[in-house]
Length: 150
Image 1 (tube, rainbow, N blue to C red):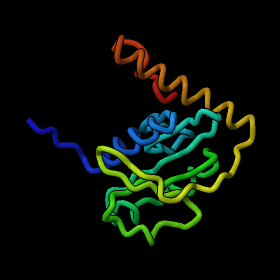
Image 2 (cartoon, rainbow, N blue to C red):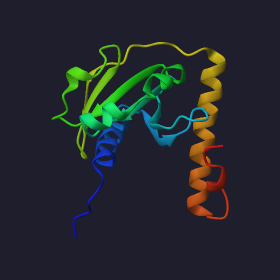
Image 3 (cartoon, rainbow, N blue to C red):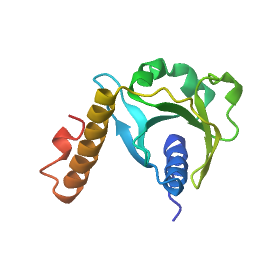
Image 4 (cartoon, rainbow, N blue to C red):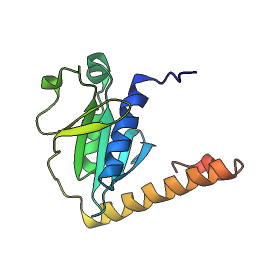
């Protein structure tokens, strides 16, 4: 039986697979601050924090009014879109990843805007603790998930 996945999940999956080849880890659906939820929060081997926002269609992109609010929470920001997405509408000052469910390619690096050391430490700890709580929730459903994003 063929598994049917939402287009956004398929794009995120391809990005996740590609980032793994770069030794970059990614945590889906991360809340860096109240009222914000990013598609992928990523940690590089150097400790950089990247945010990847997945857009499966032009309508999906046009409906996103929060993406600029994510910039203070990352060193680099990327859009991940399918190959047929009209990428010329994406801001040039952001990174661009083309993806399908199997792989991705970084076509444009997101410019580096280094986080302050204190914010980097706080976000890195929050990403790690969120990932650990989610894992605990999978192993022990009574624990972990209730505070996965807290």
